[in-house]
Image (cartoon, rainbow, N blue to C red):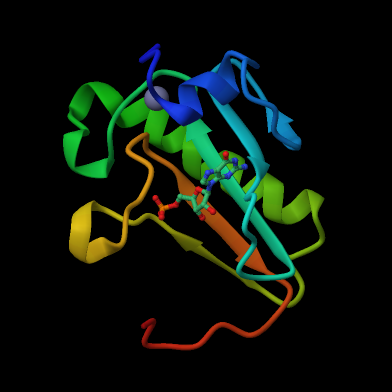
Length: 115
Ligand code: 5GP
Ligand code: ZN
């Protein structure tokens, strides 16, 4: 737990969020500023700043994160039309919250390349 961290506070329930999935390792909740009809963030419960701070010790957690993203997409009906998973890292990646998260976005076609 990193007390000044927004997403750690969502895990601790000191900041509210619309939670869509939870297990021992990860939490998934709706993005407060959705960029697609469905926009959910999947985060590890244990604080890690971003994907670039991951080490082999985080391998199981990273697997849990991706499987949870897949399960969110399935539960929210995104599978037939498809969806996008995004992890932003650092300034050029457009990261704004420094607790690792995977965006699950769907419900409209996604452009490529991204902006
Ligand atoms: P990033 O830009 O770091 O990849 O993504 C951070 C995401 O967190 C953004 O899409 C932003 O809308 C979302 N976000 C920021 N503050 C909050 C909040 O207080 N609650 C929720 N649910 N999402 C947030
Ligand atoms: Zn955190």
